[in-house]
Amino acid sequence: MEMAASPEEILSIGPVEIRPQGGLVTLDRRTLTLSVREFTLLVEMARRAGRIVSRAELYLLVWGAPLRSGDRSVDVYVHKLRVKLENGAPGWSFIHTHVGFGYRFAPEPSHSFHNTATTR
Amino acid sequence: MEMAASPEEILSIGPVEIRPQGGLVTLDRRTLTLSVREFTLLVEMARRAGRIVSRAELYLLVWGAPLRSGDRSVDVYVHKLRVKLENGAPGWSFIHTHVGFGYRFAPEPSHSFHNTATTR
DNA sequence: CCGCGCGTTCACGGCTTCTTCACAGGGCGT
DNA sequence: ACGCCCTGTGAAGAAGCCGTGAACGCGCGG
Image 1 (tube, protein in one colour):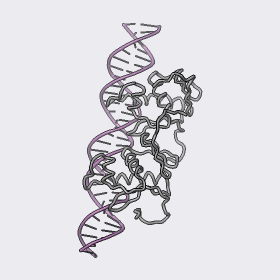
Image 2 (image 1 turned 90 degrees about the vertical axis):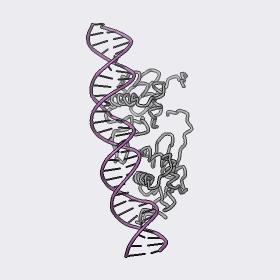
Image 3 (image 1 turned 180 degrees about the horizontal axis):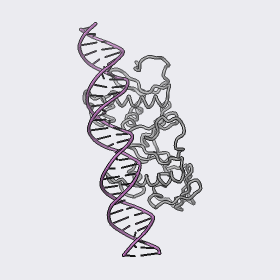
Image 4 (image 1 turned 120 degrees about the horizontal axis):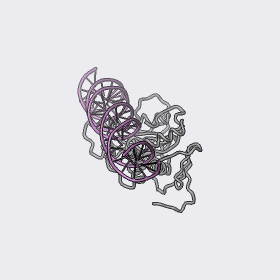
């Protein structure tokens, strides 16, 4: 599941720029400091931007083991990520919760138009 | 930009686009948020678009158990779905009632009449 | 030894979602 | 007209899901 051949993969989504190889994240050009877990989680979510990813899949991707029922690690790290991201780029929301499904990474301006049902 | 190889099933019917594995629904390009039940029901109906599906069959498909007499769950969730769908795409009707038989999923421009909610 | 960052796990509370009721209107047969 | 079956729809209670602060342990550098 690892492909090391990439010269330099760069994920650029909204104000976020991620260099998976380099361990670097910048938000609006300013570098953001993340722990290893936070970083890995962000990378895996960013690679699947726009899609809903279940906790089980995220856990498998980041922790490398199947999610045990009752484990809230993913939630906790999503929270830590949200804090750092939204803190570094006010006015944006990055990780959207889909109750019962999982999380979806998609940087969007916090609130713009007429709301009709987005994230609950 | 990000692509993880995955032959994803996509149901595209009228203004509705459904990714059964992704848990995502878009209406006229805008993402629609549904609960798990709502989503599963929509998927099963969309897979049988144009055909009448009985409550018993829908219940079996979505709830995974035979429908007990008197149970109105299917009706309730059809209603919830209708509200969200028609709310997200005014001018369309999606789920048609066939009294005594069941429901039929088929997005159609709603004829601007002021009749009651049932189609025949 | 002490402080600190990191990762894990708990616990509390708020908010969603699901299920079930209850009532209302329409259609149909008697 | 009346009763009955069918469906639409709002609401209430229960159950489940998630956000979040905090405690605990560990390893590391000072």
